[in-house]
Image (cartoon, rainbow, N blue to C red):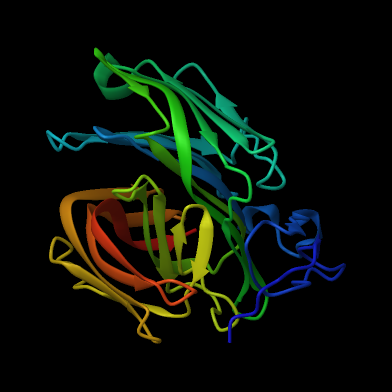
Amino acid sequence: MQNELTQPGPLLDKDGRLAQVGWSRKPLLDCNLENARFHRFRVKRWDYYAVFTPNRFFSATIADLGYAGNLFVYTLDFKTGELHEEGLVIPFGNGISLERNPEAGEASFKNDKASLHFQADGGKRRVIVHWAGFHNGRGIHADITLRELPDHESMNIIIPIGEKRFYDNTKINCMPAQGHIQYGDQGEDLQPETCIGSLDWGRGVWEYQSFWNWASASGFMPDGRTIGLNFGQGFGDLSKATENAVILDGRVHKLGKVKFDYKSGDYMQPWRFRDEEGRLDLTFTPFKDRTARTNLGIIFSEVHQMFGRYNGRAILDDGTSLEIHDLIGFAEEHHARW
């Protein structure tokens, strides 16, 4: 019972309730959070960018969680397994700017330690990061442009969380990436034929204690077509909209409920992903565990984000069977008090 939205409109009505519930192939609803009937500390907003190159994974996030802002950058070297992450906690999100809607606008933060700037305009997204002290002065600097090709579809959901709360989410997989990453003395030029990025754009009001699973990948098929995966569970009322999809050459092939079959606490064991209609059967074999914890008392977060390879098959909307081999991506378990 997946409800596809096709009409634009406001996210929230005048009483702060969701005007529509469902999923869509592009962002349709204006994220009018000013209508939310919650204190601003309960509203959560973030932009999370991820980039896969042949050599590494790079990610940068600007988040405003109400009580505090959170900026973090991390990078993983696929060959050596070196993973480094650093973050900043900003009291009450002072100095953080985030755009109203995912299609266009700017997100930014700058202080004497780091500068992060994201800009979206006309199907082009630019991610600029300067963090001179990253990894004991090794430093990391990035200037990356991600492009949404014509008719590129995204995975969008508008769902309730409990009786009063809600989640507005846009995930865009498989955006060709071009630019440069400089990590210490290691420089890498990114070319769109081999480098690809994604966006997780979230706005909403969550339960104070929250849990979710998320899995994602963006890469290339042997014939050059782009291939993306996006699966999620554990948050909100997904009866009218899941975020589960296979994205082939920019087109969303929508799935219903997908089961995450894994052993919590033993995350390096293989994970299995299957849907209820027999359209998906993937095995995810981790090769790296990224564990990140933040404990500020009132705010707590623990994520186990596993990097690994997806293998298996998916049935597309037209019935075609798609074989997936050694697609690098991630799968995670996340607990939060926020």
